[in-house]
Image (cartoon, rainbow, N blue to C red):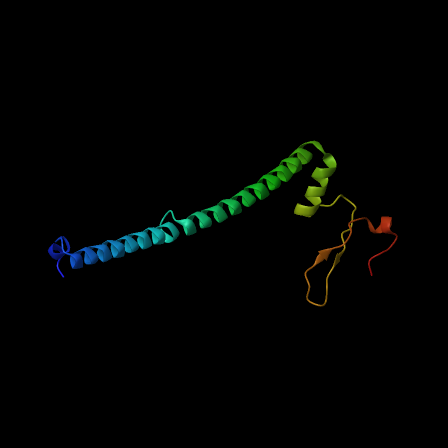
Length: 128
């Protein structure tokens, strides 16, 4: 049936026109629903964006906590001599004159762990 036949006034063409309009409306609304769910700004995209926002907010929170700890460490290193000494010992492996450092090597293949630092005379033991 041609489109011109749809616009004629008989009963059969009225039914055909009605079916055509119903079919076109259903297709239109299906396309709208598909766009609302799967489109660029659809439900799935909004859901993904919300998940990304939550993840980024958690990362920001973690980084703020880390920054605060680093600020505290900087302040301690600038003002507290014992913090400076501890950092020099831990990060640079420095010792005071006369101190002896014992390293215990794990024969089972583990990593080396430095032992407590201190003078052999202070500990009351001598290396064997």
